Each structure stands twice: as structure tokens, then as C-alpha cells.
Length: 329
Image 1: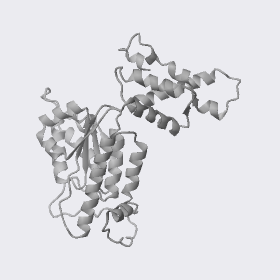
Image 2: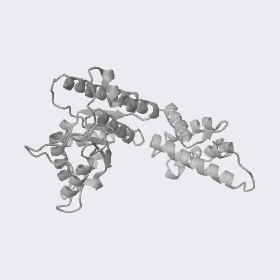
Image 3: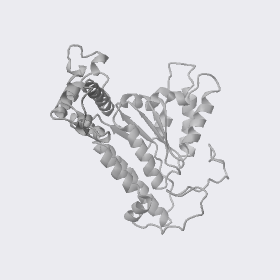
């Protein structure tokens, strides 16, 4: 039977499984209590997740620094607990603000892993939702939807993207406020078993918090995700190609850099997401170029190289209609 959705006075919560422990297996011999930071990191392997975050996520130095600060707080809390210095578990509900494609969901996934490895949450999974997953369309529909999402997220991290859409004061028949009230109760009463991350555009999130002071007071950490500069976008492109066994041909990387210089000033730009989409279209053009040469026997280099022409064929280089969404391809 799963952990109850709401804490009941006098009830007990099942002990959390340690990372790597098989549910139902005989209990392993207790590890020696850690008394140094190095020992906590070695036992939890949280360092591996932070190193992975540093390695895989380009840029975002302020965000990474805040994640390290939060990890440090949890490590020190564990050392205090090992010495019998009991203290209330810190509130770790967070707000992630920034434009699309700046790494908010990726960081949330890594945060869930760090919290699990340091013993703050029981499972370490991430449940990502939007308003549609929480708010119903008729009376009596919102509470069951919200509670079902919370039930799935318990023991991990609940990531609510574009959280400001929960609140629509202009619509008197909107049921978003009901979802907010349920979230507030769980964020306060079961903060030791669930971390909630609210995400969205910075200006809209600030307006949301001004309209919902109860929600604002429960957010302990505000992380702002800046737009990537062109140099970081180019590095992201390198990583994305390498992950799929592609590479830039002679002059192609310079052409892609030129593409980015144009694209960041055009509408609907979405940082790393736009880089991924642009490279997907470059792969499509490469495939069409190779497909036309039907009798040729291709080498591995042929099949893995993105040429400059595959990128320059983009409409982004055509400045005749910069405001057209079709021009962003």
C-alpha cells in the first residue's frame, strides 16, 4: 500500500529505501555513519549526479552554483543528524524561471536524483505536469485530478510547467484556485516527502506569486535560467550532434554559428530547443542530399557529416520576411 496522500496524526510512514536497495529484500547491514562531507558524498554518490550536471549541461553557471549550495545544505543536515542534532527538514520547494529551452526540466530531473541520493525523498522520480493535468473542466473534477497527480509524485519531485496558468482570476468559473489550495496544503504538510518545482516565464511567475502570496511563501529557492549566449548554443550543437554520431563538415560549424547569430533575433526562438530543431532539419537536408545519389556507396564519414550547404539552405538566411514563422526553419 502506498504512502497516504495526506499525513494522518498518529500514523507512521514506511521507512525510505536506501538508493540501490531492492524493495522487500532482507535489510542490508547498516553502513557506518558518515562524519565528513567526503563520506556523505561517497555513500550517497550525489557527487556523480552533480558531475554529470556539470558535464552534460552547457553554461548556466549561476544555476549550477545554486544546485551545489542546496546539495551542501543537505549534506551538512545529514552530518548534523548523524551527531544527534535534530532539526526540521528544510523546505526545498523551488521556482525555475526563464525562457523555453534553457534547461529547466533537465535541471529538475538532476535535482530529483540528488535529493534521492542524499535521502531527502524516497524515490527520486520526476512527475512533469501542466495545468491540464491538474485542473478539471467541471465542478468536482479538479480535486480528484490534482490528488492523483500528487499521489504519483509522492516521494519525488512534482514539476509544474507554466504554473501561472493555474490562476485565472478573469474567469469566475475557473477551477484552478481549487488545485492551488490543494497544492498549498500538501506543500506545507508533506514537504518532507515531496518537492514542488514551479516553472515558467519570469515576469508571469512574479505576477503569479504576487496574486498568490501563500504559494510565494512556500517557495524557498528561486532559480533564474538565463538565455544562452551564441557561444554556448554552438557548444550545445556540438554535443547534440555527437550524441547522434554526427559531426560538422569543413566550414559547417562556422555556418551554423552564422545561423545562430541570425536566429536568436527572430521570433519564437527557444534556446537549446531551437538548436535541436535546427540540427534535425539539417539532418533532413543531408538525408535528402545523399538520397539523390542512389548509386553511390557511402562511407561512414558521408553518413555522419553535416555539410555547410545542409545548414545554409535554411530560410533563416533569407531576411526578406524575418517575422514569418516559416522563416525559422
